[in-house]
Image 1 (spheres, rainbow, N blue to C red):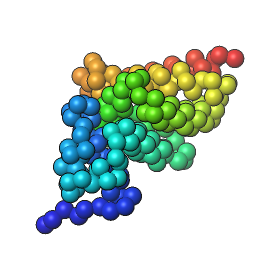
Image 2: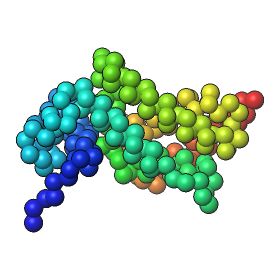
Image 3: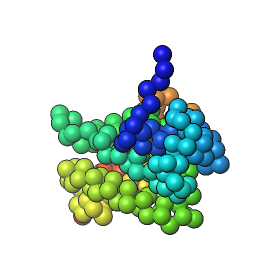
Length: 193
């Protein structure tokens, strides 16, 4: 059976998905237009047709990961907001480790590339705005101001899980540690009146 070759927006997504996987598994040195074509199962030259420059390819990775982050936000139903935050963090590290590893690689690269930095800053702003909504529902004063330190702590937990000593924890131990950390953070932010 032959692999279905995606077209249009689906092809752009396939290119970004392949690029994210390559960055996560091979680092930025392993990311070439040709390698993306091969990884995505696309005809040679496809990636260059859609994304002419390396900068455009890197920015497409950031945009795709942000779209997945936004679409992965669960609706606020039947779960306390704290459990939603814990669940999202745990699921992200389990289901999308490539995205996290690629994001950390791309974040470092962005310190040298203004266009990529702009995409990462905008994505972070959008995610922090969403996080502020969760914090507000948890009774945190100044949720917009609290979103930055909360996001930084959550990001640190995810980084440690995919690239640090936290990778040695069992899934149960990691989830318990996340719950404890997020609970302590929320309690601290609530007390900051």
